[in-house]
Image (cartoon, rainbow, N blue to C red):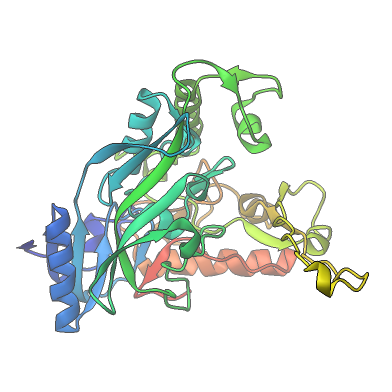
Length: 378
């Protein structure tokens, strides 16, 4: 554990906002991370863990607490109990995109469509990151957690994390706290061994994004390369010379709505029906059989709709900014709020609230922020 001179969080976050914390710790090893967090929690200070800083929107005031920077790295390849699969245990501070590159080079499939997503591996399950129809929930086996309440390290299965659309029990949502206060130390994924051969591409979203037909076959390396190109065109790959990448990625979540509400939206609004959960198996002991089956549970059909389309069709085009503001929508993607140079958190928050108001007025839907908000309100 190394205590360092605090620097403004505007230098460590991709939205480039935030003042300096009262205290800052750099954790380069797993033991450093555990020790630093335990000491911070014992002191009772406010605290914040920081990986790549790509999913944080931090307020302008200095953070009166301790920031723990997770700088651990490393990938361990392990056998899987399932033939044709491999497990990778990855340290929390490892770059997510570096992990994707490693997996593709090794001929492993399962996360190649999530290439170019900024941030660290430890943050990925918190947010249940995803892109083009892939989510980390599809490949996640377990995580190692350090629990704030007990200070203990435990291994927690993916099923215990409450993974949903861009959420988990570990995520602090706008206006609420995380259901479980803990920090991820490592992540274990299970990927499929496919080598460099071409194979069919599953998922309409990914095929559409890459311009592939239903019968197309490509390699995982081809998918990664073309996803990176697609993201770069949208300003979603970090580039210090491109102000469109000074963002937290997609600032608003694609909305999950009922099928009936989706039908009130214009037909042109892109939408993706979500698969309902499998019906549970009902076992009735023969001695208790009375000739009747219990009613099957009813599930509300849900649909994911495009937040970017809603924003643009509420009259807010790419590049939109409020008068005299240094915050603006990306010129490449209407879902990214960008810092055009020196924008304050207050300016970005003002723009976010304006967008929410316009979409609500036009379509009756409140867009929810995707980044974690620290010291800022919408």
